[in-house]
Image (cartoon, rainbow, N blue to C red; front, side, top):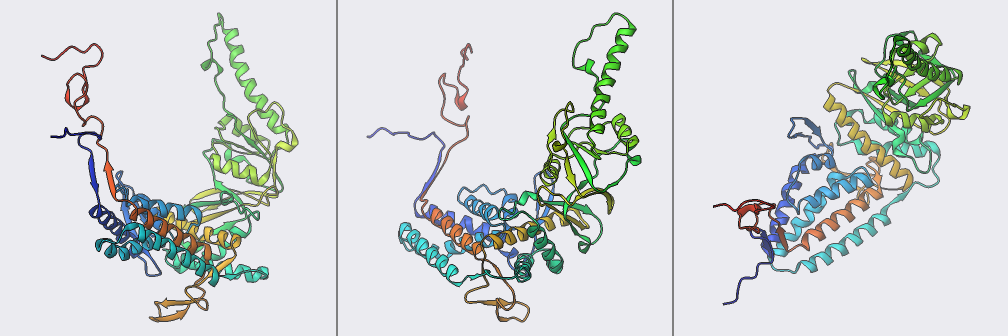
Length: 486
């Protein structure tokens, strides 16, 4: 008899052949069934509760796929294509998963009949090429449109992206906001990080509005804050990464003194250090002082006495966006503050929005930026509104960068309102051709990848393997200096 050759660890799960391929296709079908009902204008939402008890209500395919926590190795491919579609295009995340699942479903009978998977893979790739070529052939260019015509086309694209979302009733209001937001950015890059989205609980969705500048929530503030001015025209801004608090230097170093006068000198020096920083900021001519680190009560009162505004503990993202929009530099020292290190904007004001107060900078010269202030009831509702707007923003950006649109196969589509076939182009059900091209390409790649797998090898966890040196099961070797048992 031939001796048994053990290549893999004992306990390794190994399954292969046609049953394994069919099992992988079935697993993908289960994932597709989980998101299938979210597609289209009549799409329903999913309520997903994670292990910590946080509930998320979403219609967005990529969000649902991330939260499902899928462990099946083949089905994870669908999660990856949903993420890539979200990152590359921003919309069509449910479509790409369903398209991949439907391809696999149609090919499953051929696998069961014994057709070699490589033939199916070649067919899928040929079909993908034909489909992409057809989309490019059908696409309508947006060239030579007047600014108003272009704006109307973009609004229709944004409205289509919101048609299946929770906010579809307010799509006219939000599509105008989204188009204004994207067109306010610096072309041709249209940097996504220059659009801020802030959520304020309370009010109706229609109360949401666009700020043509930087806006962020009023930070934690000390006594004396209310005495500070809340508006400047124009405004000079000092951006800091400095703590303006009475920092006891004796906490950072060992100071040995032998009398009270010496100790008093140490205390006076600490105060002097703080006042020198504050005086330097006042002399720089800045009206507004923003810092990533805390600004204490002494500094707050000092600025209030000199008609200056301050905000400490400003989130890094908001501070960086303010810097890019208003110019200047984030300072780590106040020893020398040149004029060019200060940011500038035409108008600064603090405004009450619902139950929150917001600091708003408008008329920013250095870079174009904007902030969407979203209103609504529940926190989950606001989060889903943000996800819906992200999809619409991405669609509008892609429409500007890739100015080719499609509206169905030579424009036929299902009209669920009239329960009939309609002209999608006349109904303004448009989207960038790049959405469909990306979805078809990614779905076909995923289907081809799953079809080309004929074996799954699952390694055992450490500790469940064969006996190690020393004879102890479960990997408990004798180790260094461990006495023999028995």
